[in-house]
Image (cartoon, rainbow, N blue to C red):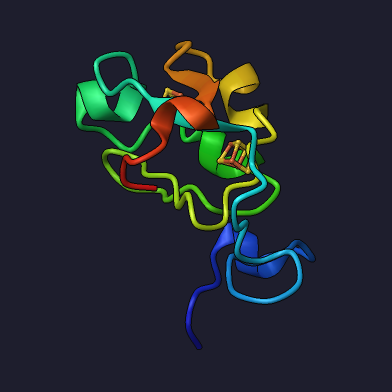
Length: 101
Ligand code: SF4
Ligand code: SF4
C-alpha cells in the first residue's frame, strides 16, 4: 500500500482544476520565496517546510527548494505570515504582470 502524504491523509482541498482549483486572474498578491533565506534551500536539508504544512490549498511542494504552484495559490499569505525565516514576501500581482505565473 502506497504511503499517503500529509495532504492526502486529511480532508483538505487538493490542487487541481475545478471548484477551488485553478485561481485564474483574481489573486491580488502572490508569494515569492527568497531562497537565500529559506531554510531547506540554504541548508540543502529536509527541514522546516512550514509553508508546505500550513498552506490551506496544499500548493507548496516539500522539495529542496520548496516551490509554490501559482496556478492554484490563492494568495492568502499564510505561508508568508508563518515562515520562521521571513523568506516569503507577498507582492502585488499587478507588479508581476508579464512574468511567469
Ligand atoms: S516556511 Fe520559509 S523557511 Fe520554511 S521551507 Fe517555507 S519558505 Fe523555507
Ligand atoms: S499564499 Fe496561501 S495559498 Fe498561496 S502558497 Fe501561501 S499559503 Fe498557500
